[in-house]
Length: 529
Image 1 (cartoon, helix red, strand yellow):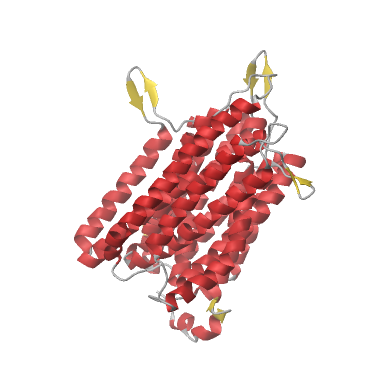
Image 2: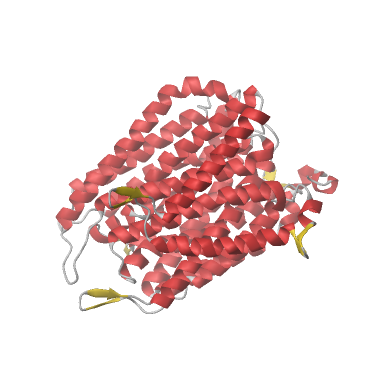
């Protein structure tokens, strides 16, 4: 609960029409996303080029990592809601992230072929897996709670909320823009460890910013019952101590899970056996849905229950959209690395650096959209969250059609043109700005206040399944290049064409369905736009 001092004179605690706490969250998330996306830009290329993973195993690992990294916010959100408070959760998550990103800088020896068999540095891979586990757990504590703090800085039906989330989203993408270019350049020019190490330094800056800006959060991020947190529950150990120890134990569990290298259903003597990663995700999902449904039918009024159902619907839209979007760190990376001309504006751009295009276009689009939504609202022409989300899905599908065109119309040397790739990113990011920040805002408005962090965790759980599905889709274009062989560009373009066309119809078809159903679904939002 906010203290009287924290709530006093809110006008003096504002900057450019928004609470100063928004900018604390902005810069914290900016540096956290710098570290996260700097590492992610390099991850698939690092696995395939340095550790000589096959395309299939590379997709499997980034899918398993992505699935777990977005499933953990469910647990982190629940712990922050019930005991720890959002500020402590963000600080603890930030510490884990710093350790994980810096651990990624330890490369070990590159893999090599010995008599046709790949030999890898086993010790370095174990450090790599441990680093991924630390990042996964750190994101679980930080990600849902920093977003929830933004929502709590605004009152009910505050017209600045959507523009505030758009500004916050710009912070995410400012960090992602710089990190892809800088970490990608360092990693592919001077060595992978330089790129990963730069990501770790960025996270350290984010942690320092959040700690120093605590006073501007107006007390909204503190534990609801500090006395319970300090209670001794196991000898000298308090409940807070046990939370931290449990999280460290969770790192050890994730360390083991991430090494399975598999997110698919493996056929073993006639039986489909889910991988450990999928089992863990299904367990979290079952617990979350069971708890949410119990809460909705036993603790909510009819209006609250229908609004909570709409939160689940928006999570479903998020899942579909990010199944398409997350291919930008999978199939789009390998497509641009293998089958595209890289020269533009007098610079030869690497595939990892081009991942910054998405974040760059978010920065371009965020200011006009942050200006547009309040003005459309005042004019009575705001299309509403459902229509915006449907259009976001359609734009995502259209971005893949741009790539289909580029694959079918290569340049004279057989490679595709980089400017088609740039256009595809722009179209995709129009879709993201229509769906993602608006969806985050709606989750904070429609969720019952005492479970809002948990529902934000549910949003990221939807994203976790989209990571798995994106990796599975990417494997449709997997290309195995034998040792010493040369890539057949025409055959590769044909495989990417099929994947991109299939993805396009997923986005466009889903968007049309949501547009058709929006008049019915809007009733369950009960006035929330």
